[in-house]
Length: 372
Image (cartoon, rainbow, N blue to C red; front, side, top):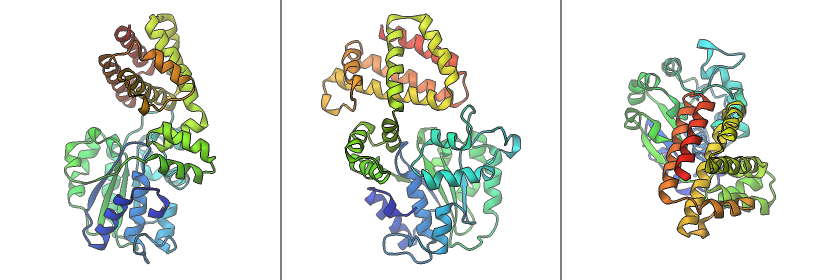
């Protein structure tokens, strides 16, 4: 991955390049951005630029041994940590990042803009809770205690550090604050509110903006998507490249129908169908569960826009338009705020392995009470 492979983000690229040219490289940096943007690709491109043997003025060469190895995820001085869970073949103390390297290399080389749900599908952990364990922290200290094999800088890239529990985060505080010489931590985060303040205080934050519509169109066209379809998906995705892909793949149509039925049952207080829907939700798997709730948050946003009369900011299409027109008639600002809070709270607990059926039914009953 090189800077030139990432559309937009010009100011961030210049900032990162200048830190290397001026030899002012922070030993721990937090690449912060919402899901669906370029924080992971930028961290990978920055790693390549740091260790490139023949860098150009504004990018890594992409051809030297170091660039080639980093691009494939096989550089001996480039280490990765990421959220994982047990699978059929890997359980217990073996659940550490090094045992998922084959899947991770496939993920970053084929889908560097991918999100957590796509990563979970890649390594086969759909129905398990992912995290970064304390054992992983021990592995971080172990890897960084060794001398670099060949690189100028040893890089430890932690993807989604917000999935570290308190024990694992506290275990790396000392090495994060005082790493070995020529060692760089790159933490790639989507939700800083879930990070310990002790982690935040030890990192230099690199704020990364969301993609604009043109950036997403360029990425989609690169994937051989028709330009007209790419423009439409980019407009609806609101800066989230993965959301644009989901729209093109039709998964959002499934969410649209399911969400409409869900809200209808809540409004009519059809508890029989809500229980059946909760059972379906239980069997769906974490990817579909999160997808529906995240879609619900976007629909709440659209209903709020409709209620306030700011129709120019709408990002809905097709049958969604008529649904939002009707739904917004029963939604006030207070109701949207409360529903958003309830959905976010359910997402939080699902990420921490709460029972999906109970969580969803509880959410449905509370929404039914507020929107009626």
